[in-house]
Image (tube, rainbow, N blue to C red; front, side, top):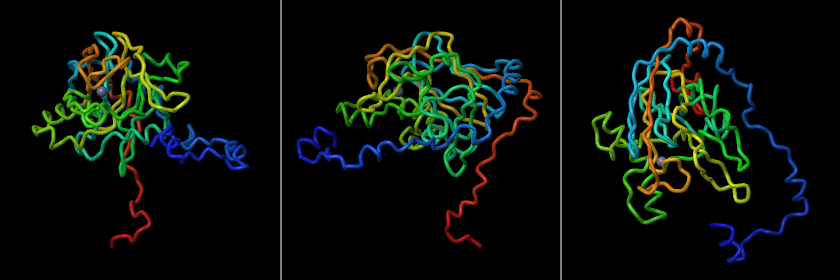
Length: 297
Ligand SMILES: [Zn+2]
């Protein structure tokens, strides 16, 4: 129920208590303060980057998705090649699809938008870095006057279910469907049999924020240009999938064929492994998983 609807029904709790001001004056506390967990060794990362050689590349066609595999210790880039275009990224443990990117905890740990040095974390009970952002040519953008930033972990992915709910039409080339088709092809299964593996994404190159008045999720034209890229170190063996969103630069619309759409490129690099010999590769969380219940004997 929105506020205006509540007003019409006379349900709006607009009369504030006498101590409203003091309640509102409570000071914010960062939930997960930066610096409380060890960050990546950015100097070692930079050294490894300087030695890396491209070993593979593939193109993601517009309104479609492709899967790719990256071994632990390799780097991968998502590159803008034709014009402004947003990409929706999913990541899984290559050996176990139940371990996958956890956008919500990544947001809680790093913020609404991610950049160099931030990690893409996996879901529980694993909760470890799957990838570390090693370079981002859009790092200059920061947050603009609308409060928007690049590469968000606040959106989910465009999908045919929400589109049907809001527009009453069936559209088959939303990112959820593109990612489903790509993973289905990888696993040689039908999309409907594997779509539960598709999860909330990293919105690569997307420019987003929350409106200042109503705090609603908004998008604006991506500032990405051909040649721009975001780059990651794979912290575990990864299966990835990237969708070239039907929203194109996401300046106006999505979930339709209306927007101009461009291809994206994925590049995989192999560094001199000696440069990463002291890198601490992440293990799944060491939490005992008893959750306060009785331990199994
Ligand atoms: Zn999309």
